[in-house]
Image 1: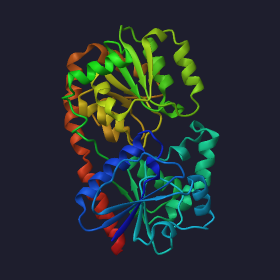
Image 2: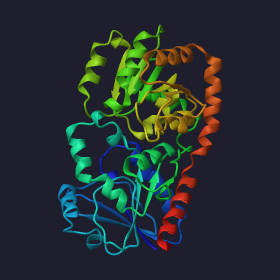
Image 3: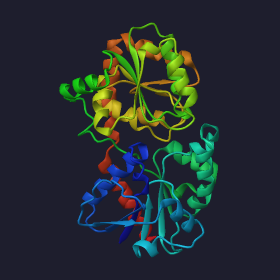
Image 4: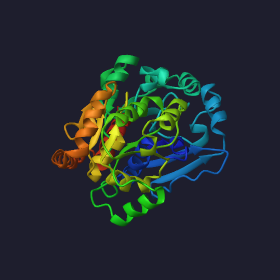
Length: 375
């Protein structure tokens, strides 16, 4: 069987949840699958620095079409993916994107969340227009199978798009415990602390700066706790960031708030390990890689009690109401001083991460893909 995989989600130049999912899943799939061949497709007029996929069962095919033009050609059905990369049996898209394939070609898509449909007010005009152009409902109706990264996302898709339940398969992403584990070298942490002039003790907010992530809520809570600790913020600037940056600048504790900007994947384990706790008060998440990575390195988590985060964190963290600042304040205050509770949550977190394994993710994904081909 020939499986085409859309790599265009890896072309952003940064690593977020979608890129993390795509990279780790592909590496496991290509390593374990000895039966099928893979056509790995991406498109860009410019030179792209994509990860290497040197596997005997995989061929990377780059199109020189600029993506905006290619998307338009796909949308108008003036070009098919087969005309670019040749025939294949299944197209697997690790994220929503514009595509045009032949009617007989099977299609499998991973959906990471439905926030764009549930909370459109948190998106800027550019992203609203993109999702309208994408026509998510039509794309999901065309798909033969949909992978959801959580039961919450699955239920959202059924409710919003009236999709049959049997079409959606929940396959949890994993965490790479070779990278995210409690044994982070002290040298790595010392180097990171010196590079970014990090304080001795801090809570960590690690996420894209956008309204849905509720950084303002975390800052409000931090301003209210009576402590000598600091708040470190790491993540790229997303959209609608002006009020967020203004809140940081005007905070009464601005001398204790440190914005690092975007950090690369190699720096994340040490940063998570050094922090008192990860603060993750999002209004909506389809999964939650950062809480999972924090638990893997042995750092307690404060996360929202809504959407998909309870599926990830379980009872291994403190779940809070993201709309209630007092809730976040109490969670931060108790983890700031209660070492016994911190140790309990660290232990529970270490046990919980075993549920999320990339090898299992790849096994389940492959089994479902092969099932599509024979259905």
